[in-house]
Image (cartoon, rainbow, N blue to C red):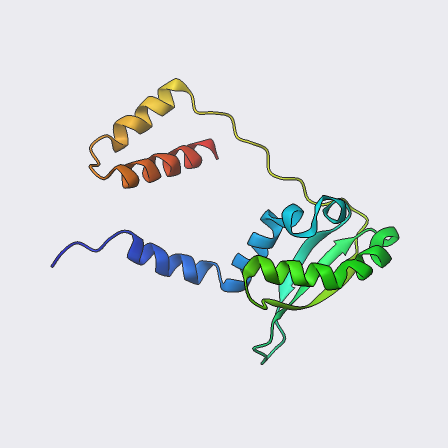
Length: 149
């Protein structure tokens, strides 16, 4: 029996760990500036993506904004709804809910420092015997990310 590719069990674990809703919210968070436009993204940010119980309809996207901007965001909601759904290529979101939050949007995590020359050399040595270039590169990136924290 041929060996099982690493991607098979990894895909099962990933799907179980991250359901579709979480993956969609992560995509919205990551691309919010491009979806909403820099002006709207400057005073709003997505906080939740929820589905109605026993419903196959689209999700409800909850956006947070300071109270001074909520009326503006309410007026932008139809356009934002179209842009979010265009981003996914289908009707993923049916409704936008707006909540008041005085805090600014969450900051992106700090960029970790590069690996030391010694750690980088150890990592290169650890993956040197792997013949498949793509697998070796992927494992090298994974190892670097794990060492950087």
